[in-house]
Amino acid sequence: MIKLTGQDLTLEQLNQVLYKNEKVSAAGESMLAVKKSREAVERIVSEKRIVYGINTGFGKFSDVGINQTDVADLQLNLIRSHACGIGEPFPEVVSKAMVLLRANALLKGYSGIRPVVIELLLELVNKNIIPVIPQQGSLGASGDLAPLSHLALVLVGEGEVIYKGTCMEALQALHKEGLSPITLEAKEGLALINGTQAMTAMGVIGYLEAEQLAYESELIASMTMEGLNGIIDAFAEEIHLARGYKQQIETAARIRRYLSDSLLTTMQGELRVQDAYSLRCIPQVHGATWQVLDYVKEKLEIEINAATDNPLIFDDGEKVISGGNFHGQPIAFAMDFMKVAVAELANISERRIERLVNPQLNDLPAFLSPEPGLQSGAMIMQYAAASLVSENKTLAHPASVDSIPSSANQEDHVSMGTIGARHAYQIIQNARRVLAIEFICAMQAVEIRGVEKMASYTKKLYDKGREFVPSIKKDRIFSKDIERTALCLKELEVSKFTQSLKKA
Picture 1: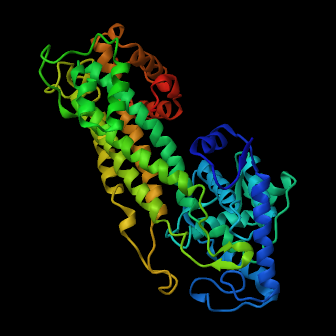
Picture 2: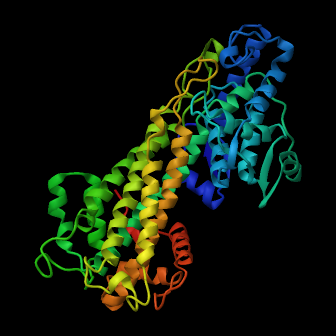
């Protein structure tokens, strides 16, 4: 059981909840802070003080006062009117993360929400009642208004959910678990939808997959080194210490370890003096991606514990301050940065694929074909990789450089961070398929060189890969191989390969 405090949730804990169904609960001291914050809201309402979001309209309507008898209707109207999501729903794991992150943010005690609302959010997490939340429609400022409104609908018994693999009305799923919907009171609707949890949840899932893929890219690149009789000298510790980047040093160290007992790698001058950059510069390029991922992780771990709604309540209600913590710029930048970093993992991987299949660049059979000419072998797999890499270049255009005013120009600068997070996730899926193609080609190359000469680490990866993809003995529908291999990489327990090599 993971206790949520609003202060110290980690990505590792999120991973446990989202992928291993660890249960969550609210820490007692955090719930006390929530109650005090709620009492402040109730005093404001009873004293008829005019405070944004409690007894006023929203956005451009912030100067419109609302009668005390209408404050509950105000919150429900807000949720319904803002549920304007469009397109395919977020992956279920992202929607579950969104619910968890919203609960954690509210537990900080600055939002004026009742404990019962947080308790219901945690019930959704623990009972795997997953809101159906369309992916498109957020500007990434004023919070992820449209996506979070679809989440909030579930709490009032409206909208749709995925429950035990079936899409159904939210009220039906709540009743199946003996839960009752709530009636939103003053400020609660606004507190639920003013936040960055859609972009942050998408970013968390993207980051967790990108981190795994980055480790796998090093393992696959190591196998490619063997398939091409790569020169191991370029990974010597002295070279990387001389430059000084921690992540570059660590990447080189892992690859040295992976290839430490290989009989397929060479020394400089043995076959050639230098390798091409896509082999020789693996530590520099992959290490730079790790620099970005470390940056992204830092920002995500701040944001998952941040108060991002508006207004925020301080000093037992003596201060209720309208600010802009809902603006997604920090995460927007992080997502755009992650897009570029993961796209480059695919970019350099495609160049290694070319070196594996191009007979002008190696001494292997042309396109790794069992009968060059009669059978095309891996020829078009390189085309497919090139296509994905090119698509990534368009997706990598930064979303955060765009802004379109909204709410009659009251909200005149927005982050587009949710678009950035969604595109980052697409790039990660594309990059995994590019690396899957490199994996298939590298397995074929080392098979030609002699599997018995492989290093222990890469041989273990080879054996795992062959469970999904057989050797290329004749042409077949390679699309299926690529998808199976990509699934292998997504489900691979990479810690079995890297446990002793994790970054300090």
